[in-house]
Every structure is written in structure tokens, then in C-alpha cells.
Length: 240
Ligand code: FPP
Image (cartoon, rainbow, N blue to C red; front, side, top):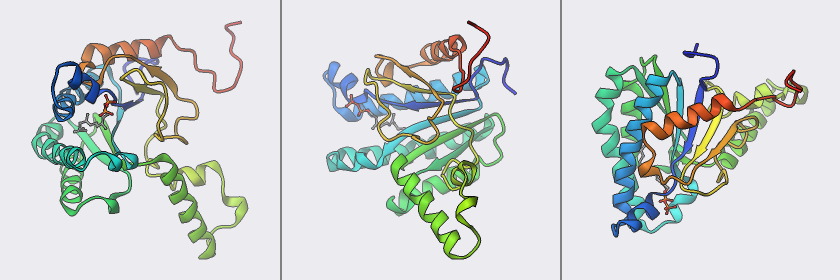
């Protein structure tokens, strides 16, 4: 249970604006990404103190491979370094880290870091941080369709058994509730191939704040805004 009804159980974050934030300070993009890790830490602290139980972070999309090689390598190094550095403290705080996305497309080194933090934090009960790495929502849906087809061919599944629940079970997020709110920083107002199935009823929150400036206070602001939203899931309510 959350601290009160209106606390979102799950917030998903599109961490956008690192490059522009760095440019505005006359610095390299890598400086923006490195500063962005401070915001990740701040949001984890704020999630723990507000009672949010799941925090999903869009760390690297399948489209991000198209960026210059140096930037991609820098992001992978930052991910590995952050994982190695933060893992003990996250475990101490009762934070469980899970990684979603196409793992086979990642280097052996990144895969080893991911497996290490997943096993070191597996006992965390206070908050689940889901890192989306080499993630694409469309690829996730194609993979689910393929897994369902394989089950059908193997004879365990007939077409009438393909329900919404059966499909959701084949997503990377099978054990994770859908996000109550999706937050995107950096001023753009789009989902960019993030959690397309899971976002069906998510509240959307767009802020012009660049990711490195998104701290505990901004996170609490998003949680408060969620409390003011009325979610109807397509139904009518008594309000009018
Ligand atoms: C988008 O900003 C941000 C990313 C592609 C990377 C996000 C990564 C981090 C915040 C750091 C690593 C994360 C973890 C979990 C350790 P952008 O580069 O697209 O910014 P721009 O739109 O201003 O160019």
C-alpha cells in the first residue's frame, strides 16, 4: 500500500534534456549525462520518501545507438560505473533494481554489470527501480507476439487464449504494474517508443525542466500533480 491513495504506485521517467542542459553551460553532452545521474539519485530518494513503489527510467533506447560512437560508449561507461558505485547503497536502502530491454544487444561487460546489480539488490522490498536499457516498446510487443506464436506452435495455446493478460505476461514488465504516471523532462511532449502498451491509462506529465535540473522537489511536484488528476479509465464518475 502507498502512504495515501493518491500516491502513484509507479512513475516512469523519460530523462530528456541532458545535452541541451550541458550546451547551455558551454559544456560537452557527456557532462549533461553525468549530471543526470545526480537526478536519478534524487528521484530514488524522493520515491522512497513519498511512497512510490516502482520507478522506471528510460536510460537507453534502441534508437540511441544512432548517436555518435563516442556518446554511446560514454553512456555505456556511465551506466556501468553508476551500477558499480550505487549497488551497495541501493541494496542497503531496500531498493531492488531490474533491467528491461533487449539484453542480447548489449556488450558482455554491460550484461555482467546488469546481472550483478540485479542479484545484489534482489531482496529489496521498499522500491523497485526498473532501468530500460536498449529498450523499444515496439520491439517488446513484437517479442511478445513471437513468444505467443511459439507457445501456439508448441500446442499449448489456442487463439481464444490470447487475451490482454496473456500478452502482458510476455512483456518485459510482466511482474510490474502499469505506470500510473509517465513524466518526460526536457520540454518535448511525446512517448518516443516507451512503454506503449503499459501507457494505455497512464497520466502524462510534461515539464520543460531539463533532466539534470529535475531534483527531489520537481519529483514531489509531479507526485502532487498526480494527486490532482482524476483517473476515469474510460468510465464516468460522480463528479458531474
Ligand atoms: C536524454 O537526453 C538522455 C539520455 C539518452 C540518457 C539518459 C541517461 C542518464 C540520465 C544517465 C545514466 C542513467 C542511469 C540510470 C545511471 P538527451 O541527450 O537526448 O538530451 P537532449 O535532448 O538535450 O539532447
